[in-house]
Length: 636
Ligand code: SF4
Image: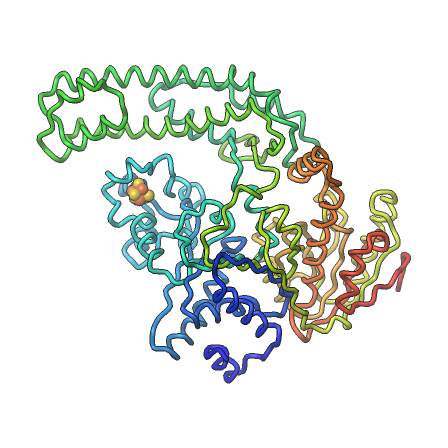
């Protein structure tokens, strides 16, 4: 028996057979090593976080734990903290762990000290003087200021990093990297997993919430370019060198893409970007190249004049010149550096060179994107999106290129073992979408689902649109008449308006989801209505009702689904198998929102009779021990 587990049992932790089974799978993975892969389906109530943390801690096995979101990383922090105190009580030693997020979540001291002292927020001054780890999560700052002060790879290039005077104290590159080396448990998120920017050797990789891996990898492996980047990050810098310089960027995006957006759609799939590549080259890339050429030439001339007039320069300044490649080699060799710190004039030039370097990095990425626009390999998908930006005062358009499936783009080798787990894991989906194959375990569920009533309206959502909408409203009122807490899981934003006149409801997106969920828990609202995140990530205990608008097939107009259908057809596979598999994962996740503890019970109303045609969905409900009942309208 694992000591931490025994200790917790003595303190009142409920003994669960499935959790013990989980321990044994993790222990066997550690023992087998050799990059063994285990896929574990662990239903709600298994206690899967303790299921992997306890054996990892007990065996002293170093691990990387990847989960879906930053919020889930913070939840893991709490679990690790509680187990860590038990571990140190039992063994008299400590477990080191680190929650590591993407670089843009951390403060860059160099950018911070560029701010005039009067503009430095008091809260940050205090945090910097404390044991704060540089993570913006723990300070409240305006998003705009966070963005201005966060680590930017174009600012902190490997070259600049070596010269940065704050490198020694840098939150990310010194403190976190040091802690990462020492960490027994390194907690990352799925987006970081694709970068594999850490030492995997002899570590176990645990992929929690593995059903979300596909989604996060697909977006993190893509390339994108936005109007915001072009306007603020590129043209904003160009204007520092050439005041008044301009390109009609807003017009370019509105002219070419504005007409594609119907209703409140935010993203539209594109067959390819080829059709726009020539216009982009002509209207955006060529003017940018011309500005950059002028900037470069004027800098070369300024540097040439400066170095001709000087007999000596500082070492730092000379070093800078070398990396920029802006003066010729002979002139560089003639230059004598005989003092360390730059003069005021040199500082001014270094600042200019820094701005030039950042601009050229940002331009390089934009030009690379322009090149990619000219190609359209079938394994890649394309989309255009837009969101209103207050800072731009107009729509911020963005273009994206992404791998249709991330399989083959992510490296799962080099780990001692890989354990992927979720309440709904489909081995076929893991293999085909993310390229992870392994031994599959399906743990039994521990909740009593016979206390769930499952009612199905005999209606077809698409073919009987009006009737379906009436069923949705009626189903909702029925559930409200029974329960103090109701979740409404929709698949289309447009359907939100069906509930706008209802009282005591909140809609996803009005406030952060965690706050809305808390309001439902506390009874401040009676119903929470939303889309994707509600199907996947809401945990509200107690009796409740759940309205499912329909079987959650992704719309073929969703860009990722669109390109996957196209790709599967092109290789002769039936895309509907893929669509059904994804919908089934989401459907089972949705059902999992209802019963969150042993005392829970509730009613699910589904407004979609296709459940009787697509038997996998029906089986998924019946296998839990739930009886499915048909109903017409007016089932009171
Ligand atoms: S090393 Fe890079 S991230 Fe760190 S303070 Fe310097 S510039 Fe910023």
